[in-house]
Length: 323
Image 1 (cartoon, rainbow, N blue to C red):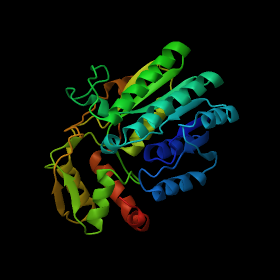
Image 2: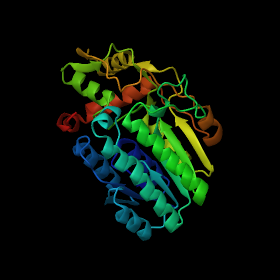
Image 3: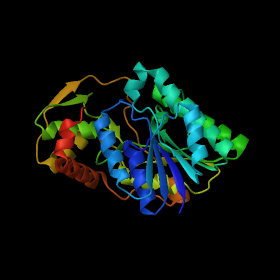
Image 4: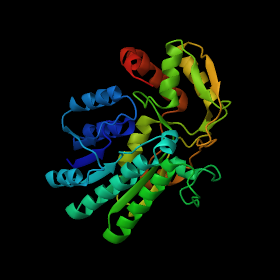
C-alpha cells in the first residue's frame, strides 16, 4: 500500500486516476480548489463518489498557495505526486492569461519545491497536445516544439521546462504526459462531447465552430487514467503522448456517433472557427507502448456509446449542469 497525492482531484481525468489508485488498495489524498471555470455541481458529484471509497481523503486546496502545499506535504508522506490540477481550455486562456500562468506554472513550481523539501522522488505532470500546434502529424514527443499558439499552450510548455529543471537539479523522477482530447462519462461540460450530447438529448441545437472538419485524436478517459497510473514507473525524465493513436475524428463524425448512440438527430447552429483552435491533432503513441506498456483499449465508437449511456442514466445531473 502506498500514499499518493492527486491534485485537481475533482476534475475529469484526475477523479478517474484516483479511482484506479484506490482499486489497488492505496491511500489517495485528493486536492482541488473547486474553482468555477465550469459548473462546480459536477465537480462536487465526482468528489462525492470518491469520498464513498475507502482510502480517499479530500483537501479543498489551491496549488497556487505555497504554504498550503507545503503543509500538505508535511502532513503526508507521499510515494508519488500526480499534478493534474490546471486551468484548462485554449479559448478561455486567451481572455485570462495571467490566471493560467499562476495555476499552471507557479502552481507546478510550488509542488516541485515541496518535492525537494520533503524528499518525494516521483512526479507525474499533466501536459497537453496543444504544444504540437503547427507540427507535422502524427505528433511525436521528439519533434521540435515551435512558438505556442495560445496562452494555455505557453503555460504547459513552461511547466514542462520547470519539471525538467527540477529533474536536472534535484534528481526528481518526472513523467510528463501530453494528453490528447479526452472524453467519457462525467466529462468536462465546457468540451464538445458533453455539450453535444446534452443539447441533442434535450432537443436543442448544438453550436459547431467551423465547418465540422476540425479533427481530434479522441481518447477515452479510462485509457488516459490507466496511462497516467502506469507513468509512475521510474523513467528519469520522459515525455509521453497519451492519445488514441488512430486517425483523428472530425467533429461531424463525432456528432454522427452521438446521434447513433442516442437515437436522435442533431440540429446544428454553425459559427466561425476560433483562431485559437488547431485544425487537427493526432498522437504517435509508440513511446508510451514501448516504455509504459500502454495502449488505448476503448475505441471512439465504444467510448461514445458508454458516454451517452452515462448521460442518459444521469439526466437529472446533466440537466442541472451549466454548459
